[in-house]
Amino acid sequence: MDTNLDRYSELQNHDSANGLHRYELQDRYLELMRHSLPAMARRNGWRLKEDHCFMRVILDQLFQDCWYNHLDRRLTAYKQLNNDQLRRAIILGTAIENGDAVALEKWNRESLHWRQEASARPNS
Image 1 (spheres, rainbow, N blue to C red):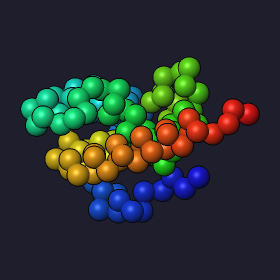
Image 2 (image 1 turned 30 degrees about the horizontal axis):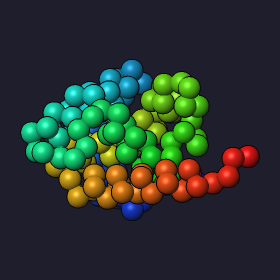
Image 3 (image 1 turned 45 degrees about the horizontal axis):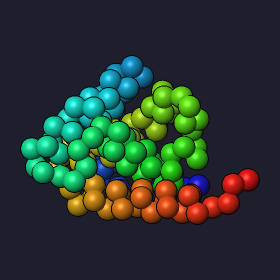
Image 4 (image 1 turned 60 degrees about the horizontal axis):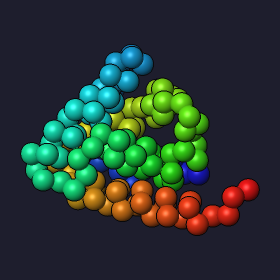
């Protein structure tokens, strides 16, 4: 599965996650997902408003697939991410925090599509 974010190259030079320690990366991720993005969504009247929705969209975008096809869904997802994945998730979240509602809508549609595909697959 291709998880590089070359198609979001304009975000790759963003300094929102560079040089942070793992715990700082986790804190920044949680700040974005639990507080900043939901608050912004309420202020701007976005359709997505709940923290778990932002986490779904960002994690699915990170993996270009349903995140639970790549991580153990019984465990806390962000704690399973390596530092590079956390940085990339923060870059995606920061793009939304900076007002890229168009990307959010696109990424939400992609996430829902991947989940629809996953539910249509026969169980192994």
